[in-house]
Image (cartoon, rainbow, N blue to C red):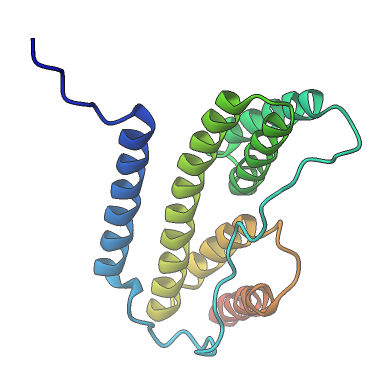
Length: 187
């Protein structure tokens, strides 16, 4: 009997699917116009910040298994609230990555791998939503639709709320203020 051909691992298939999904989403966003910058009055050097800037590390002082369980529960709870509060998606990815690192320290490689896949999947979804929100904001500015500018600025601000202050956040605040002033002036 001939040996069966080796099947790709489940991890490889999921990882390939996630990569393909992310690439397709980014291509679609590019085709919709994110690749060009409309006259948004944003400085050309002003880049949007990365939502996932650092890889969280489990504290070495306590029980890593207990820390993993807490971070995992928190991450999954926040992930379930993401559709209602964009900041929870960013925080969920952080917590799931933290749980994965803590599971590794506790010697639970399989649990860590599963959480990394969950975090990667959610991270891709949040990144696509972040790109779409930035595109919607730029389109609203271009159309001078001040109500939409306020709405989209708020959405992007919620996604970036965990990052602290930076030039992009300042620009969002100024843009929202200008849109509110334009609405008051139009009345």
